[in-house]
Length: 317
Figure 1: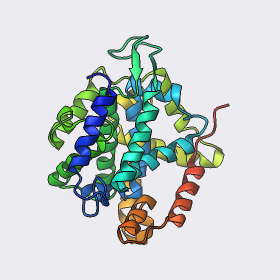
Figure 2: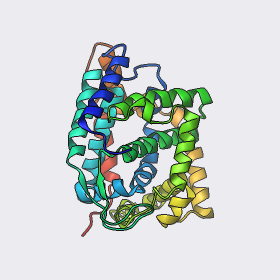
Figure 3: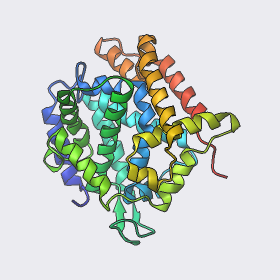
């Protein structure tokens, strides 16, 4: 497809802006399937799987390895990423556009060349963060993983809900320069695209991807080993077989049983938790804003930061 240039990006954003009926609601708003799924903290369980799916595209792996602080500031990078995502999903149109613009400016500086042969790519091939194919792949990994985790940990989705979710997600994609006519038109086509891409030689685990995967599952201390093993099993269970094999993630009877038991516990336990524990801070703040009482969710933010600090990997030495 090529790189999304400034003209194409601005045209795509203009399409999104024209489709928004109420700027106060932003891209989606209350009652949309995007808010219903994205408000669930449980979707974070798929963070490892989404990351490894993204990194399995050589362009993404080299861009992250050579232009980010993944192994020196993992918590900060994770928080910044989701600040952008949630600003776009839950913010008003102004905040969504501002977040998308910041990401675009960062992406414009991320260019380089691959350091190895990988799948259909060759060492020396140029990569860019604004490459349209890799942008679509990153968007696909977020969408696919969110739906999969939601269905396994919260409740099944009807086909019409998945279709609505995909159609709504096109606005999110549009703010990164992906125009609706360049991506799968329906949820069914999207699933076909996802399966075909995973099976293709576009997806191949490179050295940087494997290094980052090992880092993600490195416990920060001995006490974190059980959690790390659990989260590795969770991540492996959400990945296609091809990528479990390429990342060398164990997924035998023990891991399968652990995953099944964990998901069953989440499905049974989540409904009895207080509502406040079942909503991400960005969603709570969006509800306050639309009610005419904008205020930060300090408690939710503090809890979110505490959890991220508790599960951060050990630094590379």
